[in-house]
Image (cartoon, rainbow, N blue to C red; front, side, top):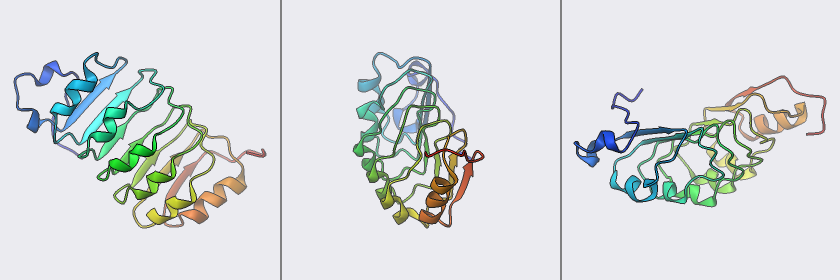
Length: 174
């Protein structure tokens, strides 16, 4: 687990070197100056933007090339941009409790991705390209997602080395 301190506002980092900030967590409200300030942290590895009613991941986030963990849970995100491919160091993608129906195929370019948390979304299929990550993705959490046994089996066949967490399957056509 990362031992670096977590900062909960830009103001908390005013008296320290921006190069020494690795973890920023924001909840409930995106800072007004987010798009200009976030680029001041060249070594940022972990970014949390939760409970903000965001409809999309702020595009500037995709330029944060050092990110290893992105948490945008509990928002209203319906789609993830193909620009996610720019986050080449990403290891953990936490997108639970959003309105997502799919992942972009570009997620398959994230060779370091080992964990995806999508519980309580509407994702019932993975892009076929994700099979390219068979040796890196260790866990995918899809609990509280209504899907059939067929869909669950299809995902497991696509990534046979991955541990999936599903809720009991439904007798549905999803």
